[in-house]
Image (cartoon, rainbow, N blue to C red; front, side, top):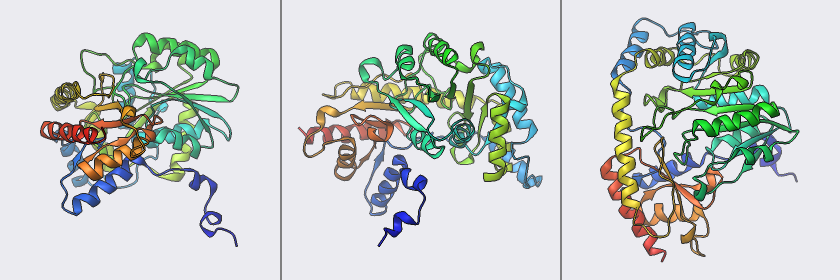
Length: 397
């Protein structure tokens, strides 16, 4: 008899893994429901409230009955605001027709991949990468091609590695700077070197820039899409989730060549229709009424970054790059692997079950030697969490 569970489901659905971060969150909630105090270094979202000016815009939208369908590609005012943002903040000349508003940054990346990738096409992913990238590539019918990196090079690839990874099946590369999970940024010079390789090969680059406003130490974010040679090859993805603490509002947006955006808009019209009307008005406020609350949030994250780096400085046998932005540490813990904890998933489980500190295994990000720690939590939790980490590491000898 055929295996019913597999014969009933598509190969596509069976090939996609569950989100590792959501799986950790689910187990953490189970333990909390049992009355166990868990310190979470797993959550990838700001712990700040959405700024009041944005919330007021959403309330006004409801009170003004702005609750019906909108244009599937997003309301014209928001597309114009996003185009203006790309031009003034990122140096990317943009017509509103080159902008698509979607249901979060993840949806934007999915739309981009679905618009440019055919069965068997290759998409290059520098590792460690955000957990959803390879799964989104597979959903689009593509094949992820991973470039390995390590802490000794701050988890960054070189232009030479990129050139060597390109084949006649390569369709695109996804770049994320600042990075989730490492917090590391590529410099303008490094991105310009990538741009030369990309332009020569004639492949697309999808630049995930959701953390662009969360940067430290006077670092300056640079958009690879502003390089003139990539005008017809760069797809720049952004959103309001991280910069404006709006993760639940689910609004992302991207800028790309007109034919790519038109194709993505057609697919979106059949899959989701429009993003939520109320969330669009909130996002419009975020992009046009920048508040000091963003600066306050970033300053707080930088303080927390400094604290967790200092607290982990004397922890033996771990390695990690000092983050340039975002709110993550990617910590190489491979020296603690043993028969008891042979990989990052086993180590993360040990830390959660035995020491009640939630982390995310590096295997979810394409590097099984590490775990990701999010410091988007209170300073008190950071201090207590590091104590629990050290106890957990110490128990492993």
